[in-house]
Amino acid sequence: AVVAVAVGVVVGSSPNAPQSKFELKGVVEILDTEPVYSSTLLALAKWLSSYYLHPIGEVLKSMLPVSLVKKQKTRYQLTDSGYAIWNDSEHSLQPLIRFLWTRKTPYSLATIKSKMAKWLELKGEKVSLKRLEKDGVIVKEAIDNTHGRDSLWSEKAVEHAESMAANKAPPLTPDQITVTETVISAGFDPLEGRKAYLLHGVTGAGKTEVYLRLISEALSLDPGNQIMVLVPEIALTPQMTRVFSARFPGQVAVVHSAMAPAERWQELQSVRQNQRQILIGPRSAVFAAFDQLCLLIVDEEHDSSYKQTTGLTYNGRDVAVMRAHLERRPIVLGSATPSMESYANASLGKYHLLELMERANRKPMPEIQFITGDVKKSFARKLSTGQRGLAVINLPIDDRILVALQQNLAEGKQAMVLVNRRGYAYYLFSLRDRKAVSCPNCSISLTVHEKSTILRCHYCDFQKSVEKMIPAESADAYVLVGYGSEQMEMFLKEGVPGARIHRVDSDSVQQ
Image (spheres, helix red, strand yellow):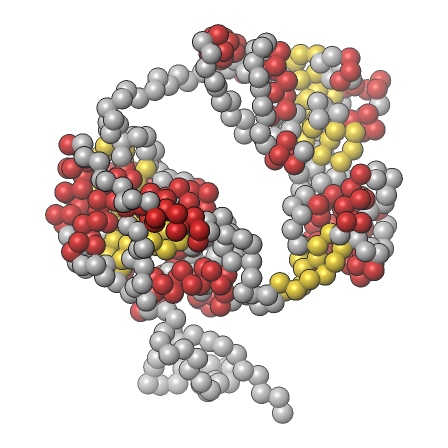
């Protein structure tokens, strides 16, 4: 008989066998010399399961380092022949190749099937991965769990930061002194009912310096003390690491999803064994095992990037607050624009509110002007004949902003214009059908690209020219709604003559 062996986690014990309709299995072997989950992390897992209504087994799996979970996978990568099809508009496989080409990184079989299955079905193509591999379009490769993408923050970069002369701590402002002394006077020892601190500081007020002073104080009390520092995105990790490594050389560990699993495991082990005293990472770092955790810091606590939206859905900030509660240690939540939840908790006395309302360098805050357009005054403007005479609803930018940009250019200064959408327009709207032109595969609205000549699906990468989508005599029955970065670029070239304008988005970067 074949005996199936499964790996499990002991979450509790009982002197009596529980009533169950399933046959209980015996414990064959204890795999770890010491528990993977501390009693605090196990309590945190049970809270996560209860609070977010998620199976405890999946919660525990989500808390494990990726190197302990992932197994070898088969991935498929485009070959040179596959890339050649990219420019062949007559090739039946071009849409599939365009999709695979967008990142130039290996895709799993599940990803290819989920993204392209409907397209292949509609086209009537009999395309399989075996055929693509046989034709030399893709190549199969095995990805081992000990390998991954190169780290965005390499060991050389950390060594360079640590080789720098330790930054001298700048003098604190009176407000910074008040804030740091408030936290320090309460101490870092585990106490029942210890509150969280909400540090509300304007941009440039020196919140990072407050973090550094608190860490310095914690380490001066006991060199074995450890600190968790959460940042919302991995893009901020190198920035924070440079600052912290210069102040605390040899004591900083870094983890994020762009590191190879083996590299992340090594960093987490250095924290678990107290070889490093400071851990910097995004939301997943909240599950790291510490030997002597004494302080938690959540930078930019308002940021939505702390929210995990797939699998076990949770807010990393809230999990950090609960972990601080279970560890009975202080936690500092920092932000220039606190979330409503945190500010409400501070107003209700659940959090201790700390404020830094002046910049550390005493410079005045920039003047902020809110300019809102009148929706009733929105109008349609005709494009040139070369763009099929389609009308555009909504002007990309208010005249007052345009005047300010012109004055800025006259003074020899630079300006940055942020647009929250790429492409030319949000979608092409049919006045006859009273709805947006949608993708035949995904049923989502097609985004207008390349000077209103191409319609593109941002999900499956379906593309079709406007000329083929709508006949020339029907152009008046359609309007372009909204604007993206492409249209903003064109509008600014007309509205601010003489300015050198550079557009940066995922489309322009690929080109």
